[in-house]
Image 1: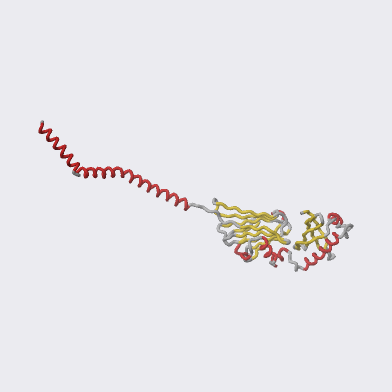
Image 2: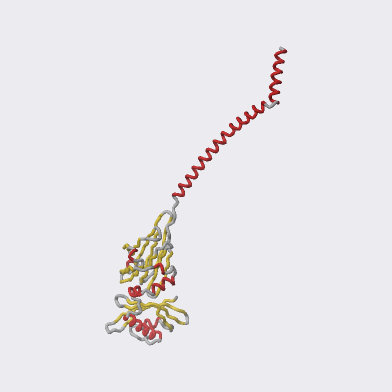
Length: 304
């Protein structure tokens, strides 16, 4: 028993000596490495999952990026007027330009719409009432460079011209499509008014050309009638005394626009002035069989 006990003591001592002499350090290091390997396995798995997740997120972002939709390019629209005509001018920064010029009476409007839900930008507008000598127009474009154009439901090829001169003829309109380089016309009211006023073909179509002999003749008669009305010389005239009564107190007039239509009726519009303020008027003269021009209609004074 003592021997055994001694042996056990010797063995215990040997183990102790081995520990203190560095052997267990090897055992200890191995244990540490085994422990580290075990503890790193979950970390590796975590990293692997994170990597897979990052790939998934990148794929989703890529797919979302590929499906991103943008709004189609819209137009800058100018609405203005010049003597005897109305002007609607549309321009896209991508290059497309379309110009409408008309002599239609009544209100003029325009609007445009585009969204990410529709790759087509639509611009539309109207002048007067379609069933009373007016018209509606519509332009559609995806890129601001090319477009389709309709006037009162009829499609026009813009390669044949982007200037439309539209003349009111009773209950219908007459559309004249002209070739012009509109890129030189600035997208502002004054710029497009000046360009339209200087275009002889536009003035001819709309009957606003001051070189028209009949219009010059009618203008001379219009000046004479307005001068006599304001001077009181027509107060008792059989046909004009109602107009003379309405114009009492006005002492100055100015004609701002004039045109002559296909029926050879001359239209004039302008301003009446007095100390109390100003008012607008319009007057239409028609040529009689005698050769003289007579007042057919007179509207106003309409206070500003």
